[in-house]
Length: 243
Image (cartoon, rainbow, N blue to C red; front, side, top):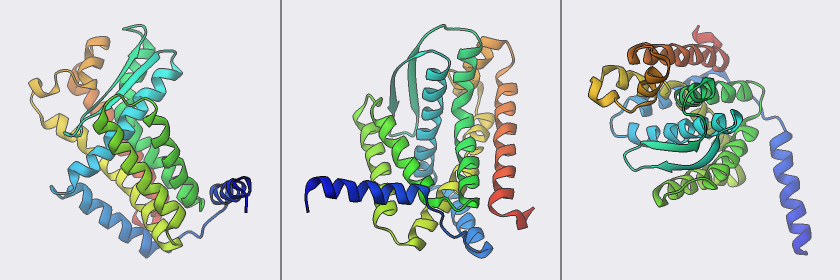
């Protein structure tokens, strides 16, 4: 078999994965993955790892909106303390800057909601391969070694499950990711709300407060309300029997 045939077969399989539908699991399976995800979010030992994944999506939200509002994306950095930063150039004030700053904390819940809709439509493999593509795109803009390694590990892990995992393993991974995004999205804001003014200094809500003259706490509450709304809609999509 020639290399061309191999690439053609690989592409055909990838395209088939992305465009095909997978059976939607029974409610018990969905609820069980949700319970596991809740434990991963709440447990002190696993939360830092979950938060790193949330930070990846957070910075992706900043980067995407920065490009959409016409800013010049310069790079993304992910740190071992689960923090991150996205650097862009453009107007320091105005609606575009506000949208870019707000996008970070909104991105995990929005992606989680999109994941829930995809799973409800039987598109679990499309979701997994989409996350691999997201990791690859972010890798182009990451400017530190730890961030690059984190993205390679995350992207390779999801890619391996998508390519070599059986239907059950793929379903578990897809539903866990959706639940984790939805359930984890409010926690960083709750932590920020409980932090003192010194710890909030320099955060996205703090920068939004300086741009809009609305208090930091108001911005935290607005973003938290949006995340909780996304959580409710996402849960009603994944497990309507809970609501």
